[in-house]
Image 1 (cartoon, rainbow, N blue to C red):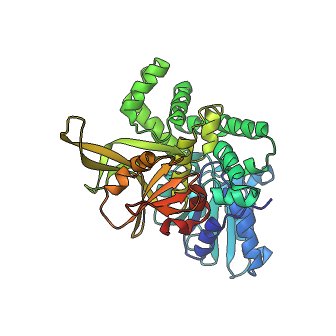
Image 2 (tube, one colour):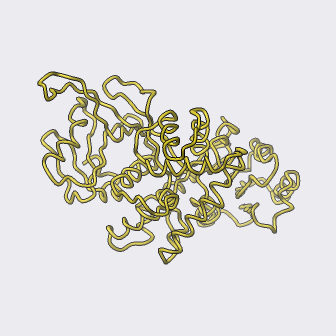
Image 3 (cartoon, rainbow, N blue to C red):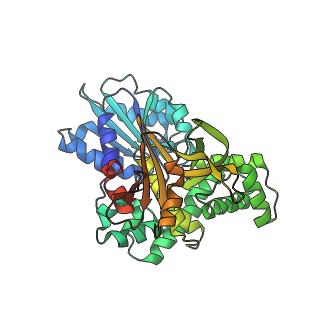
Length: 417
């Protein structure tokens, strides 16, 4: 089964011959190797590049163990470059090579070498790789399958595909597994044997139980405003253990660096400034989140919000959580200030969208509730409520676009309707 990853393939194609190291990053098992060794390789071949000028080395393959020596790898690649024509050097799981940074940098000034590398674990697992090659690399960050990519592989009714995606997420291998039991087991084993182990080993965590419990607390509270101080209190009440602010802040950073979770900061829309208080955290793959909780706590409202956040990030938006202050009359008929939340403030270049995620709008009162924050923003940017079962899109009296979840996920242009 071939799953199209056109967005990332086009990024690789567009970065050819730019005299930078192309570094493919992303959460483990999200399809980095497939993108480079299958899709990009196929593109090169179809566009006239000779087989002898595509140097592919899988450094996780035991047969290539000798090439994990940095000097041996250099000599091997040099020996294959026998003329002045362009060579495409594709290195998979390059973290197996000690001092791999020097190996990659050695080809920066070789005019007929175009270098691409993927990796997992160690520095390639984290955002450190960006710092390591600052100014000398072009990062292509790959996410788990978007719903559109997932749907292109599974087909069928959109609602059935959504139910599977909202439960098991978008890690590509999950698509090939036929039974619910195998999907569940794969995701549970993957967290324990790969993600958890990598983070604990990389950061030399002595109290892995505390880290594990914090991850589960984060999984159970996706989309809930929190910070290390609030989490410390939650941890103490749930686990009866005192985990300090600094420790929790470090653990959250470890999870972010491993691309396991993403942080959305709070932004004062009217004041046009960030609020350094509570933030929201979302999982990069909802299937992993669900596996952490043994597939309990399947609140579709929160899961949908997480998936909408991920979709915006995949499309390249910088996504914040919006806060709008509004003066309202209370029960005593006195005016008071209240804060309303905008689920997402999504920015891309000169474009901005204010977005609410709502499972349904069954009543006029619910529509008014979801519109409160959006109708209080008096600029000309598009304001949207994404609803799972909206049917045909429509506009409220305030001009807010009510958009079907499936239109949003499958038709990117729909946010401008």
